[in-house]
Image (tube, rainbow over all chains, first blue to last red; front, side, top):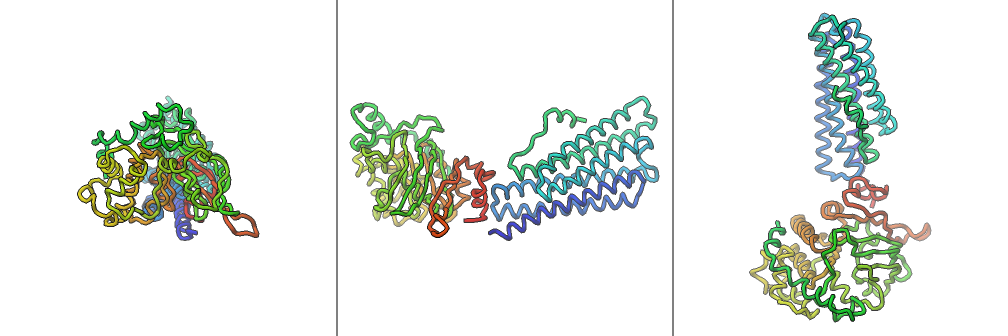
Length: 225
Length: 311
């Protein structure tokens, strides 16, 4: 029963998976554009962000229609309400990719990242990338075990974010204020990006179990950074 | 729509319902059973109890019509001054179960009830319990409005007259109509035939009529299924008002109605008796806070039913 409704719910989920893929690719290319000072690639990321915004609007509209017309309850209701929230997180992740791309463009033809920070940035980008890659499969498979792994992946990003700060405020920093601001923002973008990925995964846990996982209180302190 | 205001602004309408009866009850230590009819008129149980006091406790209740089971092994509690909704597919026994609470199944010759239902810790089916008194305290409203073919006024004085209640009829009529959120619409035409009212008004008249004999519990068997959405909204608002003073049990096919108006929801299902016999009987699947049942039910069958996947 309710075949049409189920098909529409499936379609919303498919769109979220697609959107996650777009976000993943955008951030991956933004990192490349940043490290390689690739202006064209940075432009591509910024264009893609607009497409991601469009998908977000489509998902919102579809969810709104389903709420208005199908009176969803229980799991169906959780699927739709969380889809709205997940789409908002993914849309924000797309924005953060575009922010990275804008930093790359701003410093062109130089690279915004000083040589001794390339490794840290790359590591952070890869950890953030790992979060979003898993996020996609968490949504597609409603995989709550994998969703829980994401918390640990996010901890890696948080640790790197702190490492980065330590370098920027050390006596040995020789690049001056402007690159320090760039690096502070970039570190923040990757850290937020991974955090949104974790939020998405938590929403999936909520869909499946009906209970929203809570973050261990100690970690709230980390978020201040 | 705001019945809260209208009832609160009429504190003088309160007394007729309880005072005399409650006093009479406590002053009659010789009454062997609270059910003996002569203590009845105007009497009502203490309503000062806290919100979660239990009115009915059903234990392993089964109902058979002849040899066929209609409902098997239902145990649940009905809390005071809450609205409990019974939902479930056709044939799940929810209406049968509802009728057990005021013993209207007694009127069906083939019906046989086993298990126990306690009403304020007293066995509802004990030999010395007067079924007529039970039905006074536990009123009922049906699917189709069924006013008597009499005037609005006479519809409302009928119960008090039959029960020989020593009350001011004009006051009973006004109070019950106000409580049923119907007074403003009919106060100028109380002598008109009840059939001149719209369907929704007739149903509110039936609710008002149920209130005239001062019940504690109101059973509602799909009270809105014959009404349009606006009349339905009136009844639902009214139920929320009445909940402050009465315990309500509602059987409804409209799951959104259960979700909107009830505090707790019980989900029943119809099970096939055996592989060779497709006769069905009802079972309780789960009962819980309505907010839980409609957001995260415990049982897969509840989820499937409320989300329209079966039934």
